[in-house]
Length: 297
Image (tube, rainbow, N blue to C red):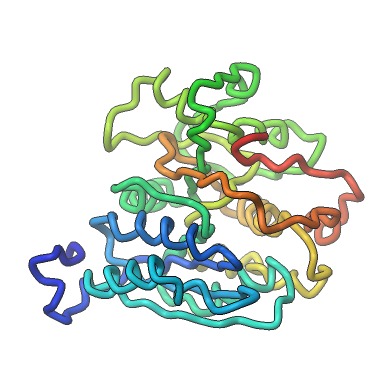
């Protein structure tokens, strides 16, 4: 059943069994969180359950009036909402593992607190994950301030999956790793226009990894350890999503989805200490730095 429209906001009835858990770890971003929630409120299907876990220095972000208002909208639409205050901080990986432990649905979407989703994005990702049967799919967030900044030297790495999505091993200095610039700026937006994709269409493509908006089959993520490697990391680190995705890719495969309906809000990062890349510690690859593929890179 689709989520409720304003005609039935006061009914008090749930929208239906949740096919998906949306997990949002957040810290010191009340305005951005409100925009992220607005994107979720615009999704018609599938029914989902929302888990927000806050590690802000001050009051939790959901007390900020715009965020609080959007949570009320989601509740009126029939979405079950769970709010957690998760302190002390033990790092990004531990925070993601905590949110994963709250999940119950077969599918989980890790959605960063600075990403807006266009209407229909959740349905496309769910359809893709069901159709492809791989470990994860995702929409790399696009920075629309770069809409007129075309980078053909980066989009040349685009490679659609032909047939089944198969397991891959990604490591620095290996062929698949060189795909990472594909997700910079607004590259995927340019590719979608060049390919002439229509509304509702999607195609899977090969990735190095995906940041910001990744939907897993929960069992695949659990089977490969989730983010339990957080105990091997200092609290200040980055790239925890890379480690989890590489492990899932090696066993189950993973794919990006074009077009991407995810928009990066382009706020300054809250992860300012990037001296420790998680994969260099967890996967013992040495000190090679990873250039972060986010809009603006």
